Image (cartoon, rainbow, N blue to C red; front, side, top):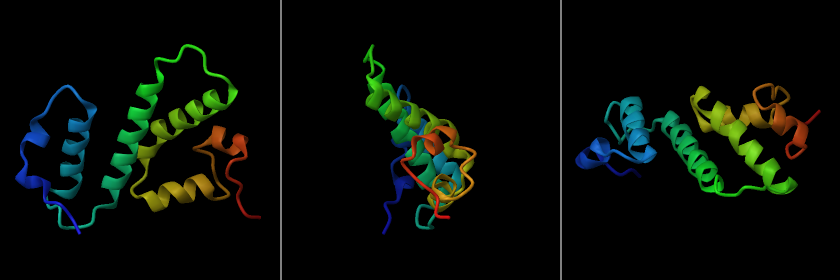
Length: 115
């Protein structure tokens, strides 16, 4: 199932919201052929969602420990996510034994690799 975004040119011409940049990036990834599955587009959308969550949190002056930890983990994800070609690769990097790209996640003990 897919939605042919190529029919809505306004999505790609929009300005003023990071969402429009994401649509342009996804269009570039899929060659404007929205019928084909393009795993990188899911990664791009995760990046967009983390960016939105981080920006929504900027109004809080004082973050207590649990919120600060979550904020830090989101920042770590946001800064690394676009390096992956699929969500599968991202999850493997986050949950596998080699979590070097996510040192805060590794320290948080939220995800433990199987030994």
